[in-house]
Length: 191
Image (cartoon, rainbow, N blue to C red; front, side):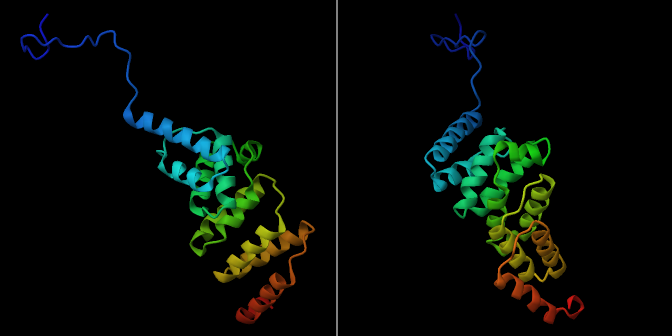
């Protein structure tokens, strides 16, 4: 037989019956997903974060895997990656309740988003979706969110969150209450 290049003595491989090969990027993503699962199983936030941010954003991941990733990373200060896992899950979910069912800890995510002033828009989204999902707010993340809103001079929003706390029978700390009263001096219309 002659080769595809017509070089005497070189036989071209038979590609008609060959099994299709996985694309290298797909194989790499499969390896990264396996690393992500191992990181989660070991409760290793650094390994989990490294694997998660390396996975191609279009690679489909199961909702429970994204929720577990967001939860672990939220608790260990990988704030941006935690929010990214939440966003990917939100895009896949059939409504916020699906995220709750998958195990997402909205309160941990909200707290994580409030750690960095640049993530206030993410915290606002997490707060909105937390409400849409019917998740009861917990006091520490709620106070952290009020503090973030006050730092950004979003006084009306901070008071709204404070009233949500009162409606949920939560008692914000004296520090949080004093910060809200203090902003009335900066914004007299709130007094």
